[in-house]
Length: 252
Image (cartoon, rainbow, N blue to C red; front, side, top):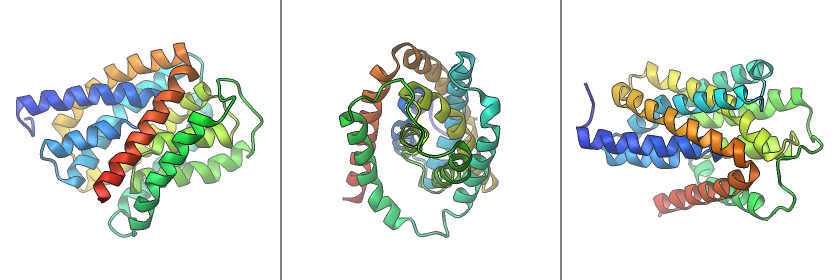
């Protein structure tokens, strides 16, 4: 049985489709779905946990699409994905224990910095560059840090993975996008596991939204693979800026 009325369910499903499209390209789908869930009457915990339910479908769909197209080898990411999952669980379990006020204040500044980086840095394209950190160190330190953040706070996780792959691992924009999706899926799933243990998600509407996420993610990932940095960069700039502005508005 749906947790909301049919008209609200239709609204949430449409929001999930749009979020799946945006998230598969540049991340930031939660910018659409979390406010939609809050408008539909979900409590903050219900909104965050239901967002994890539906978001896992979109992230998984995008990860599969990029893998099938040869942009990423999932087998090489299994270890990193396991760390992201564990970190996502830890972050979600500690969400009521750790103080996050300072991080939330800094988050809009960080997101605007990411938007400025992708908007203004010359030469950012789909070509790989020299790595600044070894893959083992990236997996051991960067992946768990961002995965923990996903479980603890959440907004901007895809953008953080993206900028880490571009600036530290030396990946081109399209390759970075492809490698982000499995890790984002894993940390999302970890956060969901922790929230599910508390009985917080709206499961039925979350699964309905998940189906819409799949459709949006399929279209978005195809567009990203066809256009590469030409579509990924501007959409990443827009979503990071919009998320920063939304967070500032919430504070005020």
